[in-house]
Length: 292
Image (cartoon, rainbow, N blue to C red):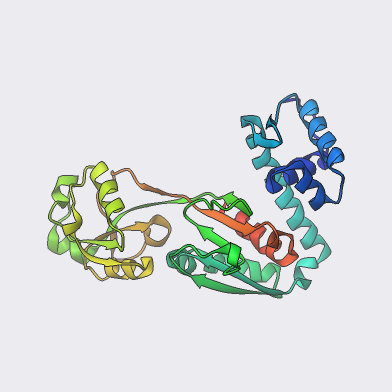
């Protein structure tokens, strides 16, 4: 890429095109004509000396250079929006309810400090947390913003991949004192495990890591990650838990910490239509910044 900075109007046109999915939709969002948006995107490609989109008929798909620029430009846009709100004091005047759906463990352990900083920036915003481990449907307005561990598939949603986290095996110190501390995966063949309602996937993941468990090892199962965490804490068995919730908790130890961790992606999603709401955009950007 060339070393000089691109024009912000061109970047804005590029961002809108990616987020809305087409030049025509970007033009409607920006209040411009489609040819104008097309010229701005083409000028950006020329200035940078790269192709940002692959054009197949009327469809557009990002190139590798386009994806790289999109991540950087999106971060710039979010930072500029936050600075503008803070400088103008508008964040203090934005009011109303925003509903966020997240898994119960994210709602209990990840969101509270983020919501505290959000309240300091925008005290007029009210937040309702829908702690649910099923995927709530943004298309039916069951929530305004979703924090998910799988990417949303609906084309009318704006999705943002965040930093993510990892998970590993943990157990209570009392449980390990009584049962012994394993030093190999094979030593867990007879251990009691705490699992979730659908355990087949977890059995496969553990087997792939050299832990020869079967469904019979899962003496306790639940659909609630928070409930599973409490079972682990109270010494019922070994379970997989997010690092963010488990690390540093008194009376809890990692089990076989040398095993490769489970990767847990985190996605933010919002309906394109709702993304134009100032309060929802503010909360979405705050979550995106906090979650990475």
